[in-house]
Amino acid sequence: MDFKNTIADILGSDAIKKEEIASSLAPTPSIDKGDVCLPCFRFAKSLHKSPQAIAGELKEKIDASAHPLIGKTAVEGGYLNIFLNRSEAVKEMMSAFRTNGGVTKPKPKNGKTVCIDYSSVNIAKPFHIGHLLTTVIGGSLYRIFNYLGYNAVGINHLGDWGTQFGKMIVAYLKWGDDADIEKRGVRALLDLYVRFHAEAEKDESLEAEGRAWFKKIEDGDSRALEIFNKFKEITLKEVKRVYDRLGVKFDSYAGESFYNDKMQPVIDELKAKNLLTESEGAMVVDLEKYGMPPCLILKSDGATLYATRDLAAAIYRKQHYDFYKNLYVVAYQQNLHFKQIFKVLELMGKTWAADCVHVPFGMVSLEGQGALSTRKGNVVFLDDVLNEAVEKAAKIIEGKNPELHDKEKIASDVGIGAVIFGALCSGRIKDLVFSFDKALSFDGETAPYLQYTHARCRSVISRAGVSEGNIDYGVLTDDDSFTLVRLLSSFDDVVGDAAARYEPSIVSRYLLDIAAVFNRFYLNCRIIGEKPDVMYTRLLLTQYVAEALKEGLKLLLINAPDRM
Ligand code: ARG
Image (cartoon, rainbow, N blue to C red):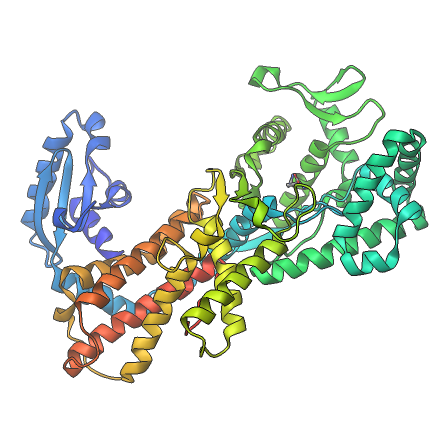
């Protein structure tokens, strides 16, 4: 938003730095209070004045500047409220869109790499509803950082190591049916896993057999690896199909097993730095001083742990990618794990430990789970959730617009978009109860509502059939048009904020705002049938709204069809 800089230029001084003003300026709660406001509370302490007095002084300063962009100003409590001079501001913002070729524009590469560890599924385990949040939050952050000019690296830290794979091999050799596995994929593997545990209760020797097969995997036995790699292939094939549906992408599938040969140097380094202590036969890093339980590095039998692999992985990522930030989009249940890992890295003297960030999120459950068609015990496959959403979307479309061209593709965009938006529309730390009916509603805070608003913009534009004309900025100074222009001009700020807070829902809320204001504008400001300049100006604004919705939805992994 350029006018933020203008205001900061006018108000900045030695006492309050320009940058501080620019970063404090905020939208007003409502348009009758102005367009931007400056809360003066944070300057009070250093200036030894009341916020109100500071707001008063700043008001005088800004009024005295008589800058063409600034209109009325007012002090309210500790706030300085500023009204922009609408015709000037509209001209400035709309001209900026026109020179940039639109509202949104991916930024040039800034040379900084952001590693994003997300989704990180476990081999031979179902890809279930519990993976929805990590997958779409991570996938969205991936697009958001790329948009802002970072080089995002998507990493799927596969859970592909552990004694359970020895057990899986035993189950496969005893009861596995290749044709069934071929047909039902991970579901068949899951049945084998469940069967192993049921049979192991009756027959203790199975556990020992499982351990023996895991030992073979560790020793690189070719038969063991062949079967294990088959599990991996089956899982990845299925998972990747869902990733394609969700539009998420990974640059690396280096999972836990990738670090098998990268942990010894880490253990040596921990030893050399006197960080390892023995505790009941195990080797740990004592973190008592930091109010945390010890971080387990080696079990008493010498086996490495989840934490050991994460330490090796972080060090590898720093060496390999030289990241600016290293993010872990993992459920809040692992808060302690990441706090421990980051602390151990810090104790090892890795200054970049401060650039490692755990991005936690809440739990997902389905409203009325009983209604789901395919369930295995308590597992709800993500693929089934997507299928169900697409089916429901298809029914809605059939009811609303049976003549629609390309119905199947649109049902898929709407159904899958609804699930994704359902996951990304509220703050990530909140637990989520997913409801198909709510997510698929066309007039709630949903993807279909945003997609529909986008399609509505496109439809007006194509119906108008005008591609050239004169702009009359004065047409855009009413409340609805002006609010819309102002909202659009903060697109990049909003995306930047979402990145800074690792919070895609900031983009979601923003798109809902745009859609709401556009729909008001559409109701109050006639487009087709107006005089050419008026029509053209409003169409141009409509075009910018469509573009912002489309690009914004894309940052949330959601497609915006032109027709619905
Ligand atoms: N596979 C793990 C799980 O399902 C998540 C891995 C997260 N990433 C990591 N580097 N620890 O809990």
